Image (cartoon, rainbow, N blue to C red; front, side):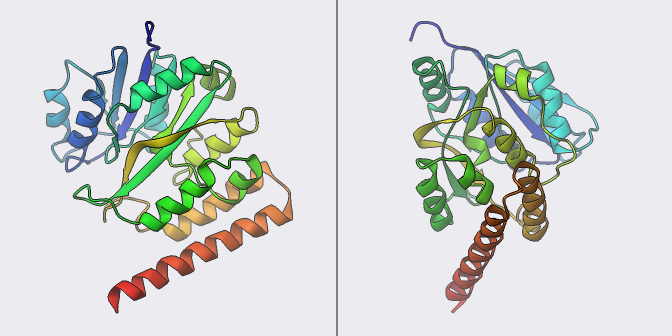
Length: 261
């Protein structure tokens, strides 16, 4: 591949000193030849800024108050100049050679506007966990259709990338959404374009006690349903979305019981 497209990755951050250096290293070790890495920190006071200063010759960063995660992502995207865009949260990480795989896929498929791949779930120590959730999502990854996405958010945010054309046509993330700004965006762009699929692991999503998704499953779900209703009036799809939630909740609680027995 002679001409590498420029890739811009945005990381929103707030008080993630425990994890953000792992995130930064996972991106810099990609050794991708045309990378723009932007970190938008919300005014952290836990040592995050000191970590950012260590890498300031390799990254673009700001630390200032913002209106939340979606606002931080949007500020970063507004600065981005890349042909391919993505965001990676400050406690997640890319697999090795992810950016090269992304670039090569987009070059082989110029008609494709956005793509996604597989994503592992890891704990605080980067050990892979919740294999059953990963397997469940992987089943749907290669069977994409928009109706299924309205029923189940099977896309893992760290493993999604899109062309600048998507940002130009579809706009920025909805800052009203606190838990599901990514899901709303996938539904918005999925209305216009079918994504490409890389059947390989591209990233790791970290579960830990301070992550907002860990303690807010109910709120996350209620917002997800409301977002789905914006994009379909089909009562069957909404019902299936409800049933899917309850099946996941039942399975999750059952596994917790079995692990404790």
